[in-house]
Length: 115
Length: 109
Image (tube, rainbow over the protein chains, first blue to last red):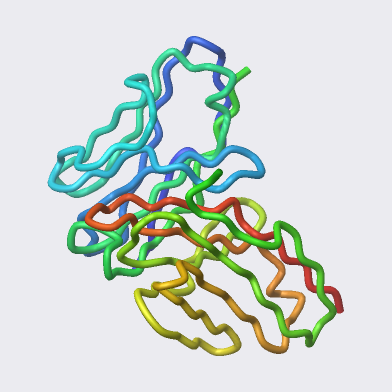
């Protein structure tokens, strides 16, 4: 049983470009959360998707958007990239609507470098 | 001031030593997660606590809801325990996790 898988693992983009990151949750999980982790920092919550809708959102600008598909996989889109968007982007999945009372499973992350 | 604070930020130990990592939070929570992150990024969930104490192998996690404090203990530490340990608080009535900045642990043989 595959855990949470993310793609791509590493990518380099130029300022102003757009990027799409992908996440497949662990089998049986219906809730996907996205986090941004800058170097040397703890992860910051971006948003959470459940039943194809954004259910919770952290303090990130509208340049950060997402989507969840009927098979529960998810995408994170970032428009008009800034140098400060360079970070590790982590996807986490959990069953039954979220991490309350549940173990959360993280993917290996996507390393984004903006130059 | 961060809503979730961890101490120490960095910790070195000799193999076999008893390790304690502390986490304090200032918000109302419904649960607290302890996570382990290895170089390269992968994060593994160690514990999810809402009260009391949990033990898994050489790892023990405790939480005191009244004092808004949690600890992660590692008994008989081993070099393979070297990693960053992160506590994450689940905000009450939400699914939003607030993370500490992590404790970098290095265990030397």
